[in-house]
Amino acid sequence: MRNRGPGQWREWRWGNQVLPLHMPDPKAPVPEGQKPLSEVAYLTMRALMAKNSLAKLTDAVADLVANPESTDDTRISEARFRNALKAAAANVCSPEELEAIFPQPPDAVQRTPSRRPSRMLRRPSMKPGEG
Image (cartoon, rainbow, N blue to C red; front, side, top):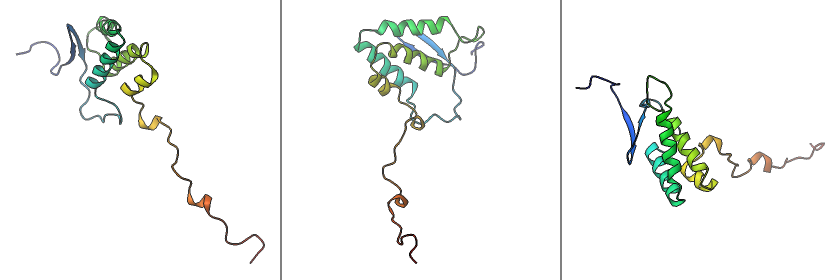
């Protein structure tokens, strides 16, 4: 039986590195278009592996473990881990590769209307001064 630590625990493991994570609120809505943390971490590792820069990710994770958010709790928030992954990939990957791993939220993407409104196309049936 556990006699220490919080009741719920989540950690990200890779090789010999272990990163304790805060449990996100299961009732909180996930932002639309956001990929799961495991997928983002995998895609980031593969992109850095292709560029022979995997040491940057190892250093970023070691830095997160060495500098926790608070002194009494060693867990890291998912947002901070995502930002560390993005920072490690931003130094090496092209903007297109970074966009594939970390897509922009749909509301941040500017959408142009596909067609003009019909009011703009209508012509008046009568000329001014007639009728």
